[in-house]
Image: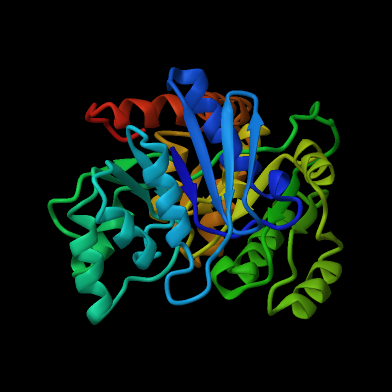
Length: 347
């Protein structure tokens, strides 16, 4: 059984598409039954193919997700996979039951003070904590928020739900950035790297896409226009898939990510990817799926992108890496093996 603590919007089936895809992948991998419990909305049940979906309303008072925990106990699953392990109140309630619990790190800083003691105590009750990269758990161990005895397993947080469109040939390199204008995304690094690429290849073009604006959007919009690029904001999945299909290079200079949706989508599309050298990107790229550069180093980022542009096999390697380790099918097989107690090497 999988539990999602975030309340759904009216179009919950669309907003929860990545989690539904993971649930279906677990069924395809051999899980006997998968129940997906989503907190929020009104109490409903749906059967979506092999997955049973339960919507559980939030309750008034200090424990709004108590009903979610009660539903988990009622279903009597072999195990519970709980998304967002830093929701400590809900996870603590689950840990007080006899259920076998796996949790997943889906964002947030290291808890400090009394929360670190609670977090460490709850983590001792976990059968495993799932992270994109093992290095991500070290900060929690060092901060005293994660028990050193907690079993750590690695798997991508999600995969791509975008359609795969035929590649659109064109003069290049066609550079794509998918990021909102936020400090952690380091948009200025991507812009400087693009100018370095264009200095070598004057025909290079820039496309910037984002699902939301971010606090520095006005500056970003002006900077993209000054670079002769095009900016797409708040676009749907079909339009986003078109941006990937008509690009050659993806620049992803983030200073911090939990996983990296655009990185995975770029690998699915078979793009050459130059990105910052941070733990989740190292894990996603594997041995040779991308070129990684120190955080904030636009020169190294551009040099990595230019090396990949000169390598005709780079995009094929990225696509093969996606199919082998990053697809929903691969995630389903990996997690099911972990649920069964198998000790997994990093993917």
